[in-house]
Length: 116
Image 1 (cartoon, rainbow, N blue to C red):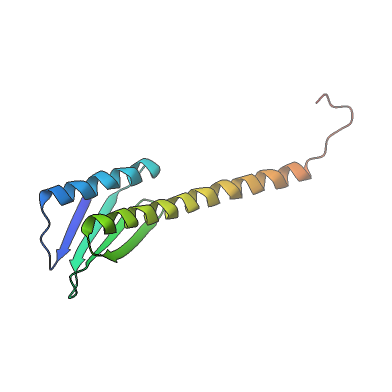
Image 2 (cartoon, helix red, strand yellow):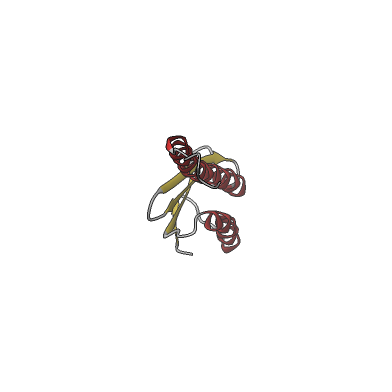
Protein backbone atom coordinates (compact mmCIF):
# COMPACT_ATOMS: atom_id res chain seq x y z
CA UNK A 1 0.00 0.00 0.00
CA UNK A 2 1.36 3.37 -1.03
CA UNK A 3 0.16 5.92 1.53
CA UNK A 4 1.30 9.48 1.99
CA UNK A 5 0.48 11.35 5.21
CA UNK A 6 0.30 15.13 5.56
CA UNK A 7 -0.03 16.60 9.05
CA UNK A 8 -0.99 20.23 9.64
CA UNK A 9 -0.78 21.52 13.18
CA UNK A 10 -0.87 18.09 14.79
CA UNK A 11 1.51 15.23 15.56
CA UNK A 12 0.12 11.71 15.21
CA UNK A 13 1.56 8.70 17.01
CA UNK A 14 2.37 5.42 15.29
CA UNK A 15 -0.69 3.66 16.72
CA UNK A 16 -3.06 6.13 15.06
CA UNK A 17 -1.26 5.85 11.73
CA UNK A 18 -1.54 2.07 11.88
CA UNK A 19 -5.26 2.40 12.67
CA UNK A 20 -5.80 4.56 9.59
CA UNK A 21 -3.81 2.18 7.38
CA UNK A 22 -5.74 -0.80 8.73
CA UNK A 23 -9.04 0.90 7.87
CA UNK A 24 -7.75 1.71 4.37
CA UNK A 25 -7.31 -2.00 3.67
CA UNK A 26 -11.11 -2.19 3.30
CA UNK A 27 -10.91 0.29 0.44
CA UNK A 28 -8.08 -1.64 -1.17
CA UNK A 29 -10.24 -4.76 -1.22
CA UNK A 30 -13.06 -2.93 -3.02
CA UNK A 31 -10.91 -1.23 -5.65
CA UNK A 32 -8.19 -3.52 -6.88
CA UNK A 33 -5.53 -1.26 -8.43
CA UNK A 34 -5.26 1.64 -5.95
CA UNK A 35 -2.10 3.48 -6.89
CA UNK A 36 -1.89 5.88 -3.97
CA UNK A 37 -3.64 7.06 -0.83
CA UNK A 38 -3.22 10.63 0.38
CA UNK A 39 -4.22 11.19 4.00
CA UNK A 40 -4.35 14.73 5.31
CA UNK A 41 -4.82 15.29 9.06
CA UNK A 42 -5.39 18.82 10.31
CA UNK A 43 -6.37 20.34 13.64
CA UNK A 44 -8.41 23.54 13.58
CA UNK A 45 -8.56 26.34 16.15
CA UNK A 46 -11.49 24.75 17.99
CA UNK A 47 -9.52 21.55 18.57
CA UNK A 48 -11.42 19.41 16.07
CA UNK A 49 -9.66 17.08 13.67
CA UNK A 50 -10.21 17.25 9.92
CA UNK A 51 -9.36 14.11 7.98
CA UNK A 52 -9.25 14.06 4.19
CA UNK A 53 -8.50 10.87 2.28
CA UNK A 54 -7.99 10.60 -1.46
CA UNK A 55 -7.73 7.24 -3.16
CA UNK A 56 -6.19 7.45 -6.62
CA UNK A 57 -6.83 4.71 -9.14
CA UNK A 58 -5.95 4.61 -12.83
CA UNK A 59 -9.59 5.25 -13.79
CA UNK A 60 -10.99 7.39 -10.96
CA UNK A 61 -10.25 9.57 -7.97
CA UNK A 62 -12.22 9.04 -4.77
CA UNK A 63 -12.17 11.75 -2.11
CA UNK A 64 -13.89 12.27 1.23
CA UNK A 65 -13.37 14.44 4.29
CA UNK A 66 -14.87 14.90 7.74
CA UNK A 67 -14.34 16.99 10.86
CA UNK A 68 -15.04 15.60 14.35
CA UNK A 69 -13.63 15.55 17.85
CA UNK A 70 -11.51 12.42 17.36
CA UNK A 71 -9.22 11.16 14.64
CA UNK A 72 -10.62 7.63 14.79
CA UNK A 73 -14.21 8.85 14.44
CA UNK A 74 -13.34 11.01 11.45
CA UNK A 75 -11.44 8.15 9.86
CA UNK A 76 -14.39 5.77 10.20
CA UNK A 77 -16.81 8.27 8.66
CA UNK A 78 -14.46 9.05 5.77
CA UNK A 79 -13.87 5.36 5.02
CA UNK A 80 -17.63 4.76 4.96
CA UNK A 81 -18.10 7.67 2.53
CA UNK A 82 -15.38 6.29 0.25
CA UNK A 83 -17.03 2.86 0.28
CA UNK A 84 -20.34 4.46 -0.76
CA UNK A 85 -18.66 6.31 -3.63
CA UNK A 86 -16.94 3.16 -4.86
CA UNK A 87 -20.09 1.04 -4.68
CA UNK A 88 -22.08 3.70 -6.56
CA UNK A 89 -19.52 3.69 -9.36
CA UNK A 90 -19.48 -0.11 -9.54
CA UNK A 91 -23.28 -0.28 -9.57
CA UNK A 92 -23.47 2.36 -12.27
CA UNK A 93 -21.10 0.38 -14.52
CA UNK A 94 -23.04 -2.82 -13.87
CA UNK A 95 -26.40 -1.17 -14.60
CA UNK A 96 -25.16 0.34 -17.84
CA UNK A 97 -23.96 -3.08 -19.01
CA UNK A 98 -27.31 -4.63 -18.13
CA UNK A 99 -29.21 -1.90 -20.00
CA UNK A 100 -27.07 -2.49 -23.04
CA UNK A 101 -27.76 -6.22 -22.91
CA UNK A 102 -31.49 -5.62 -22.61
CA UNK A 103 -31.55 -3.33 -25.63
CA UNK A 104 -29.67 -5.91 -27.69
CA UNK A 105 -32.12 -8.62 -26.64
CA UNK A 106 -35.06 -6.43 -27.68
CA UNK A 107 -33.57 -5.93 -31.13
CA UNK A 108 -32.96 -9.63 -31.76
CA UNK A 109 -35.34 -11.35 -34.11
CA UNK A 110 -35.88 -15.07 -33.67
CA UNK A 111 -36.71 -17.29 -36.57
CA UNK A 112 -39.70 -19.59 -35.99
CA UNK A 113 -37.74 -22.51 -37.45
CA UNK A 114 -34.83 -22.10 -35.05
CA UNK A 115 -34.37 -24.64 -32.28
CA UNK A 116 -34.37 -22.63 -29.02
